[in-house]
Picture 1 (tube, helix red, strand yellow):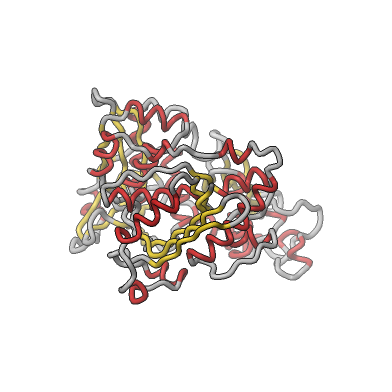
Picture 2 (picture 1 turned 60 degrees about the vertical axis):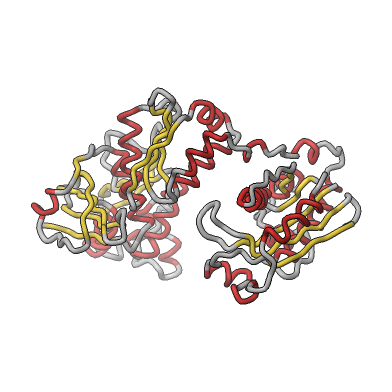
Length: 454
């Protein structure tokens, strides 16, 4: 027997969400034999983006039953059933959290239709519920409402049962959900942690650091370490006795500190990771006609890159956008191999540098604009980012193209000269990893405040 369900929540911080609507259809493998659908008063605010997505607002829930009033019905309808949901880990976690608030240990086996669909219906462009059911011709109404999504999941699950001709795949996919049965010591650790951005350190009982990481939500990330079932997580769970952390406010500061701390401490479970955080780079050279050419290539330690990328696809995506933004030539950026004009010239989107029609001086000015924008070589600058408190900001200091360190300052404190800045900067090591981290972060966050000094 299966209990196929969908849950809508308030959104918000990890493990602090509340249920706003729940729909459960009890399915015997042939037909729905029972159902339970209800709005739920979560007794907490609903995030605005969730209101826009689901249409469920606080006014609708004012007179709805609270979770403790529907809990018994949920236990009864799911008794001796396997829970089935699209992204079951989410729905199961939310249910367990709600029952834990009532002091009740809710435990059921579960099946995830996302994972089943990937196995039984491979090569789909998307496995999100809406796109998947549409591509399979399954009608869906009331999208992003519990009942509509649960009914769509019932129809999808029926199709997956039919696809599983051997009747083994679904049976082998049933989760006993051990990953959510946290040990008491792990629960104690998680309860002490904040939902903030920073670097965290997982320690053994003797204090040795066994893993260092960074997260925008430390509580959520440690919860994942303690509930995941992969090989590394199981080793961490076995040895973890304490977690300490350092708040950074800024994700960039967290990335830089994480990189330095891993190099300094060499934790046992970080060693197989991050041999290098980037594989490809953007290089430039001047051809025989004095045009600056750009090329994405594998990282070469003997050359100085303009900027670096985590993989070739990231580099290709960057150069394609650069051609569009700076009106560069496809041939001179390595995107279009030809002995004559590039494709963009033929459609009048290139000024003709590829065939000498545009002067090298004019073309190179635009290339240099791109290079100056994406490289901080020989620059004196400070990147201003979030701080640890509302009235604080972080500063990432670069002198003559070399990363010097990070610091924090109060908003009332004006950075108006380099000596004032240097007084609160904590020195850090400059290396290829830090350069890649800073450049990648600046590419992703276009609205960063950057102060340049002479």
